[in-house]
Image 1 (cartoon, helix red, strand yellow):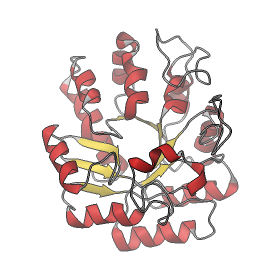
Image 2 (image 1 turned 60 degrees about the horizontal axis):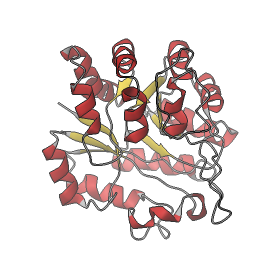
Image 3 (image 1 turned 45 degrees about the vertical axis):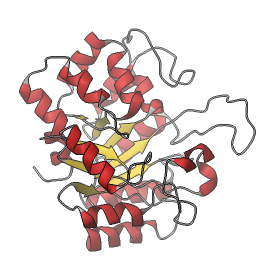
Image 4 (image 1 turned 30 degrees about the horizontal axis):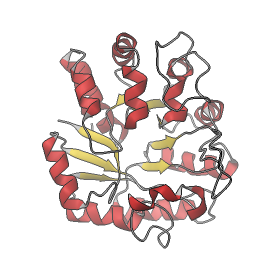
Length: 289
């Protein structure tokens, strides 16, 4: 069995039929289908050609309405996710209703220009944990893009220190770290706020191994180029990392290629390790195991 623990509806020109065909091609049994709610001016307009066509009207790039439509049409293939903007006063009520009415099992994706440990956010993460929902975080650091408008950059989340504060404040909630601002911390070098996809050997002292050691509620979302790059930039380290943290790593894509399976399968890992990464950890997080 294989579960893709991070993808989106109507994402990168994939409608439902094309999405299912892609899953079948790569032997993916189920997908966590996540929303991305965000104020219109908090994400790059470059996304407009790869997201819901009515994204602006529907509160963000990947709306709950479109996500739910996939799950309702193919409940056998998708696990429903939803992450309202915690800065909105109705956020907890909306998540509660979505759990009760539609069976939401994941709070994600959270990709917002805010510190993820602000008081409103902490209330939402704790609520998610009380209802058994893991929370998927996207992190990006501020880089100099040379632009002024519509934004000089697209930072999200507040960085690795903010993540640690959240892990400490919400011990009953499980969190999945994702994206360049998370995965760059696999290494102890200083590239995390200078390069989106650092290359070269992984150095000792990375914050991700440190946080995994300290906080049992942290999991690693392997998705996107950032996750694959973090493991493949130093394949020997990547293999050791997956073996060491086999109970805390979750296969995911955030796209429609097969680079993660190709890399994982090239490592000749024990079957039990592969099973945990490919589906058992995802089932555990949604209480289906």
